[in-house]
Length: 95
Length: 130
Image 1: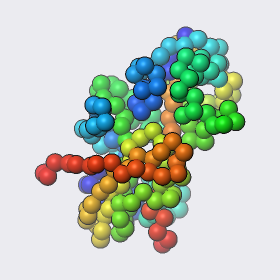
Image 2: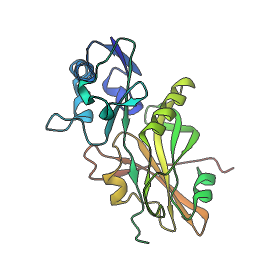
Image 3: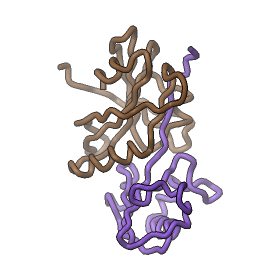
């Protein structure tokens, strides 16, 4: 049972919990268990093709899974998964 | 946030807002200045490291608070939510934009992007006078 930390704005789709413990041997399986338990979360995390949305990063403890085995990264019961968005922007005034 | 935005001028600054949520009302109790890691000129661009945001979220949880939004500055232009902001944001958080004119704070607005990142709704924003 790995632990997933739920970002504040998404807790409304997860019975207002700030973290949940879910089964799964890989990051993908744990995320799958999360969206199976809380289907309303799915559209916030995945695009129509079933892939993680472009701005969604997943960390296994302190490591970005993109630099590991992505969603095939093994997840142990002692692991904590964090969902962290990519954020950028700017005024777009050309200078 | 104002101090950070003025200190960063003429570049854009960025940071995390930590606080609490009560229904539709969000209260910022701590602003965490984060590095602007946008490559090249930062006068009209900002980018956060996801790792920094992860640390800010952990700090919030340790204080029994929540990560409720992101702030950044617009040097010498208005506190609108630009197309660049919209396309590169995340539709989960409130985004406060601070307008810094000639190095001094001018005004601020808070924005909430929709799930499709096609538009952002302006939120009511109030703050103490002092």
